[in-house]
Image (cartoon, rainbow, N blue to C red; front, side, top):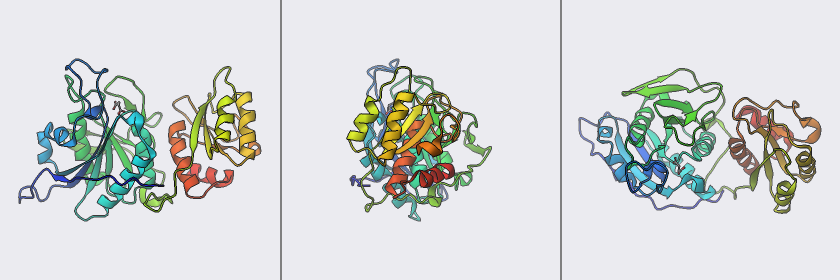
Length: 353
Ligand code: SIN
């Protein structure tokens, strides 16, 4: 994967004194989002610009950070996360790995937009090479809003990143007092401050008033235990897209993607990943040309059963299990980039990670 090298500035927010030396050292990497958004007035929570407030200002809004961590900050990007780019993913993953390899950093917090947070979180969960905590956070209300949720989310994310219990749990999302695993978490509301859930299995734990508790652990391998590497030698990201199945859908999208030399297609199927017969015919033809086809579901919870709604073995399809289509796309891109292409090899990856 090609890495765009960002010019990075580190601003020490605290000087090391005898009183603060024992505090965890947390790097906050800002990427934009509503947490860094600003609106013309405090009651406007939808007509604002995301990613316009700098990380220094975000940290300054939370003076109590100084009591819980020694924070260093970097502005890695200033984007609305709907515009998240693959090059920025490469930059972020590499920067986190560099920081966590240092004895001077105990954990990383990433501030991010909510719209694609679950995709970035899962990408990092699969590609960070450290058991030190990496915690993503965000906000549903811009920094200028009455009752903005960003400052408390940021404080809680830093507290989680500095807590020994968060080590070895993979990439986490701290949002609205809950701690979610990057693999499980999805955005489930367009407006509510309780916008993230882990469907079916619930949050990993919670953070409140400085206390961090985990209620279950992460079962599947992650971070250092995956074969996925994002570094400056990585090849370009393979073209992988998502198509959806619905009433009356045509095969136009699948045919166009095959013409564009797509390497993988994730289908957001109906129900248990079922696919309209018109699209399924197009996908079988695509699979015969070497395109990796992954069946997932647009339902939002549950899992897709292999050889359930479709005869995957015969069709040459892979099933995504409980991953939603967008997370399945992340895993498929990483697997293809690692040189895994056959349905059998890819299914093993989906069954493992
Ligand atoms: C974004 O995803 O950057 C904008 C929306 C949000 O953060 O809630």
